[in-house]
Image (cartoon, rainbow, N blue to C red; front, side, top):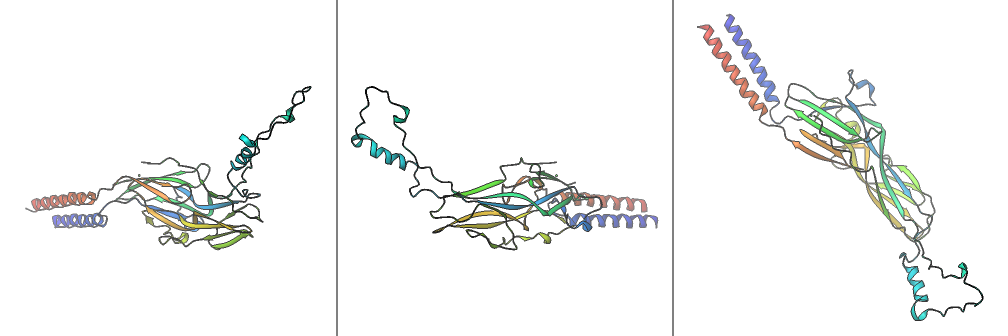
Length: 328
């Protein structure tokens, strides 16, 4: 009876182990649990590993005091002066008085060049979205040990890059902070008078189309098909994704007395998020304004669970042989 009970116990333990192993068959994925820092009641008692903010876009529209002259070639004025004063068309020099030397005022002055006026410009820069802060904890269990390393832009909670390494039971693989966090689009000003000053504003999804001033309006295009609302992130559940502010197309239109200029940009919207899979080992690098790139240094071994199961079957065989020997 003693040996039968021992055998049953061994088989129960082995079958339970098989269930655990087979439930995790396939490639081991890194996992992270996210928390909405605004929902203080749902935060874990032990705290979070780190916190980062979603990106939001700050748009600056600069309006010049005037527009370019009718001919925008800065050499035009010089060429016009040369046509009048060069070669056979040069007027005869004024006779100089013998009794006096030429004064500086009488010296020939260089031709005057018409300088072009400053152009319109629309600039998108990234800042922290204060109401969209995310905390996270790495998921560590019998299947995996996940290490997540976050590099932030200096003096901000904005993510520059994420480094991951997953052990089948992530060391930091962090990319350097790349580029500036500002991107500008500039075109020449249209002819005509502009009756408004420069502006700086934030994009709001509550008003996807808005007139900022009598001559400035913007339109935020549709949300990407793969985006979800920020509040729909699976808070408090282990996931294998990294979430970032959704990239949306923005059109800013500047109107003058006789024309319009349109500027197209991609900007981050923290009200919606897109996601990418966390690499088994590698990094995710944020772009300067919107979007991410993933670099994978290694892949998980899909045979790890099979190897563990093979070893367990050997242990079952050993237990069976031992119980049979003891029962004789």
